[in-house]
Image (cartoon, rainbow over all chains, first blue to last red; front, side):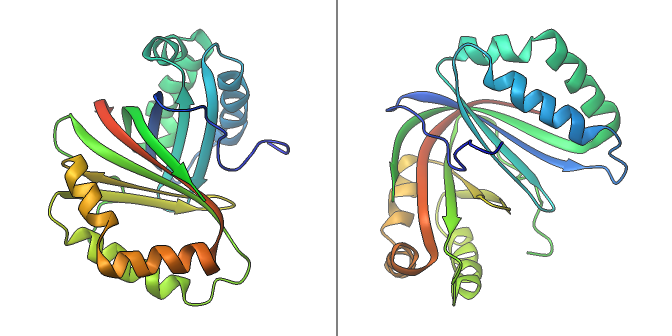
Length: 108
Length: 108
């Protein structure tokens, strides 16, 4: 994570965002290792543009992608499917995923 | 904030999301009071659907809205304009705002 920008350096709009909002269970054994692995694996996928993440009571991870197809491929990644299953069974009390078209952006 | 859901209870898609990603300055005097005031004021706006927020090194606040017009009206809110100016002058080292159409969502 060391040389990753905190705010993703995304290209000009339009592109896609996946907002993953989650509340963790108290017992989250194995979560950190898997989260680190998934962050690395996601960043290696075709069409990946960047990611931002923060967690307090709620965790928010926003990943950015070139296309809906890139998002679909990442969702169906074999190792990611294992992580999703463990997430539902062990780590998350609840979560919500939102697939978004980023129409406009600006910065300071 | 006490009775607010951690993950926003948004209606069926489509709706809009504003992803506000920021890195704060070390000296952020007055920030917390203004952030609390803005969270309350935003929630009172026409078309506001909910908000999620977390901060570590990077802060991510995602607010959800019925329409682009609701987002535009909130951006132009007089008191919010003051907050935006103070944000640029005092609180934020940098930030990025992304206006998104939420096309699809699912939850667990």
